[in-house]
Image (cartoon, rainbow, N blue to C red):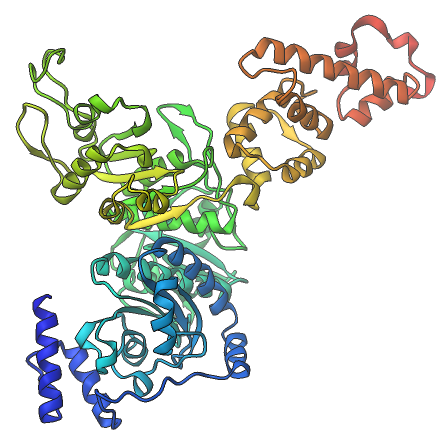
Length: 630
């Protein structure tokens, strides 16, 4: 039990003995809340029965909340996914502290329902005394209420963290709350709840200004797509008509309750800035106070939506990546960027081929760190060499040690990012070593001197770590140190941006090739068990048979069918020959359908007459063409 826990318990004893709280033993927020509870006539030993709204009232409150609840539900799903199995409850309440939605672990549910922590439960201070949700709603600021800081003694085993959510006009729109039986992840939880609240507020801001243009701006360009970016809404005449919380902070508290001329805020003219913004690259801005910013058109705004976020060029070679046109993936990217900017450990889950390493590289870029990105495949390291590979060794530390020793992968990542891929396959003994590293970031090379490193940690796995923990194959304390932010990339079949991904892959690997709508429809109907990696391979296969760069549905279908049949990706010459035969067959079939009319066949195929001649060879010449071919 910590000092604050003991002090709060002593404060409860004084409260019950003297009927008033002790200001010396409580924080100012908690003390003032206790005073309000006493003024309401509440007894800390006799809480009233839980106040539960009837189903019609709950449904009406949900409907009234509208878009706010919709945005909150997306955040609750993400938070619950990260907290699952840790005796947590995640909830969203409206401005009246009525719980609209609750996600709870089974072992938390019995107590939660008994305390009124269920949809329809009311958690205002007059109903439940001092509690994070009710007190955050009253004070309109984030609150943490731990154990004995709760007014009612029946809640002393809970730690609750709540963050208010505000609409663009500043009104309280709701409160997100995370409650648990443990204090061990308090800071971790507080950060994620704050991220979720900001995400909801930005969603409400974008909806309020859906008919305006929105720019994102920040002092540092790498944060433009993060939750720390300011958002400004601009009318077509150049007036600034709205700003999110971060933008108001950047611009010295200016709220823009009244529209302001762009030139009254920034030193650059609106027309010149907006012309440059349409080029989709960051532009420089200076406000009238002299502060410098980077700005882009807001990537998530529906009106001025730029090309999808591509994860990008590494070491001069375009790498296959993913785009973020899917709303869930865009949210994941934003969370990862915000966490990387704060150097928070990130865990990326997802099936093989979903782009985990590419997202890790994006996190490294977003962090702004100048050191190297160092990927480590934990599954590929021999058990006997893992410690030496990760932490290095001195010359002569063991038989076979390299002359001069080895720096080690962790030290190579000093000032940069260490990416631990397939972390679920790390042997148990090395998990203990890694846990010690995360405690103080002190590297202990074999036979060498200790040194401290500055490393951003990103991990990835396709293993269900909760099951691995239950089976004794993975340490729960290590997981909690690695997943301050935990995200799960969806499978390709579950995403809504397959067309954007396919076009991005073609632009990267087969420039000049394009997909017909029929080809796109077939791609969208495929199950893609190999995810983005499989899609890339099939597109490359199809591009070998493209006529004038056009990949149509028959070509995509054939490429997918031959994947498991005659064409081996490891034999590119055979693949190319096979698809060339297919191309020739399609041209001959179209010529047969058009009675040998080369012009008509070319139009149906979407190619030139010369292309038809080239593909079929000299078998048909211009003299054979019917007279109406002109």
